[in-house]
Image (tube, rainbow, N blue to C red; front, side, top):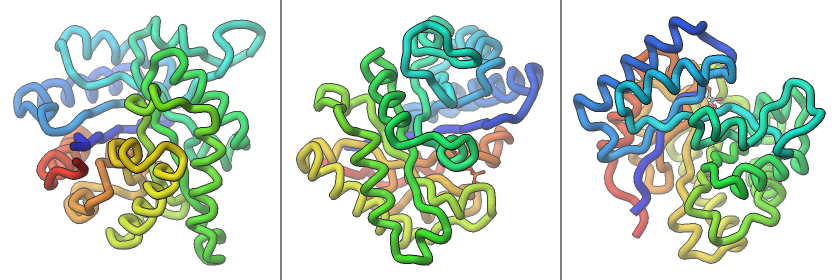
Length: 263
Ligand code: 13P
């Protein structure tokens, strides 16, 4: 069975005090309602607040995983401004995002760099959420499946079967991110099925059936249930709605309540 997995990507938001408060509110609610029994949960604060959030989660003995929004592939050296896998692990991080659309399209990261980051994180024993998704003009041009396939094949080149249990894919159509326009459940399900077939061609059907594929892009409490009940949607990667504890928790509850998926 694929346990649902919901991540809160805080992006470049909040300050130290608000990061602590949000982490604390989430940790308390997850423990009280035992939400982690039916859903894996991770939060991704900005680098500078990782330590603050780590301390809150540690003090509450929380099962919420601590995530980083980015990683640099080399372990150390002259890479001004960058942060490596050993540094992240040292700060209590267990999961990282790679290939987020803002890093692809705002910062200009290539498929090749995203692949290096993905492999470095997996080689270091971290979990990875590899984000993929098409832009509006690519969707309009009928390119959705080709873009997703290219980003999956390039992003996962050199990843070995032993590492797949630590891999999650996030399908985040770029036009749905931060716009209030989520993909319809049917469109998202269709994209997820196609992504799973690409994973099957790379790693075999059994392995592909175990890899979780999150949906991301304007998910909120009010649309989470219809997305999370789709047979190939295994949770979500949440931006704006992850900055408010109650809103994020309502998405986690929707994912936890969805019927079991996979074998
Ligand atoms: P929104 O939920 O704000 O659309 O952002 C999605 C996202 O980019 C998560 O990584």
